[in-house]
Length: 308
Image 1 (tube, rainbow, N blue to C red):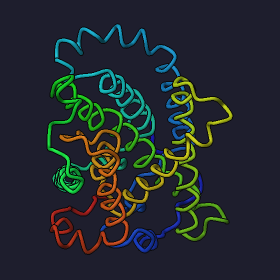
Image 2: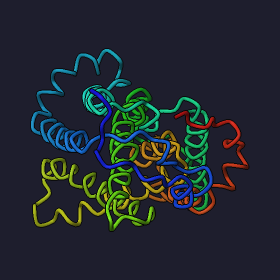
Image 3: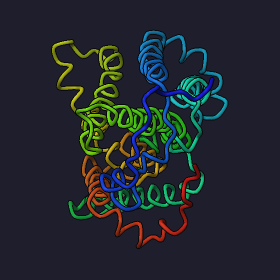
């Protein structure tokens, strides 16, 4: 499919978006623009895929059980299903039908080491926080009940399913694709003359879509329709935070890692909800001080300028 996003010439806003996201952040001008048809197809396909998954979950689980059993739980349903979503929606619709390149949706190999480093460092911080919390409470240290009860492979499988499945899929579609593409579209409108205004509108619109995609799962989990607003608050807030982290860093692998850790921190000790504190602190530290952090870790020098 040829690249023909709109008939209106694209405004030259080079430099404006960098002012929105800060030094080292996402540069929307460097990304290729796709069509409204692609955006609509991705949104519709995403809703249909998630709805179908929850409607047929028992059958899917039974069909994939031999694979899960053969790997001792290291490969699980979440991973396999979301990999299918990645192949069809990311590979088929976004890259092929939408005529975009991997780097247009944040898949930049040079960004991987920094993403891995921040993810690993955050995981260590979470474990240290958990151990410290137990010691301060006078509790004895012991392996988490989940590790003892089901074994290490299923526990690791949950995290693998997030990093290479759920978090990878959701961050690529709703943060790396939908957010900048809507920002580009909104920047063309008269009410979107300011790059900041266009970005804020794209931020809200993309994360509302992300939130609504969680409706089938909440309903399948037994949530009453009247209670949906309460149960959808967390996905919306987290979606906005992940979107801001991606905009601030321009590094999709950072958001994938943090997303995966929030969903499944792979706790070695049972320390309760206190482990969310360091995770959120890392998120807010990135939002507040990313340029300084980037210089400190040396990430800016190692990241190549995107080619045209």
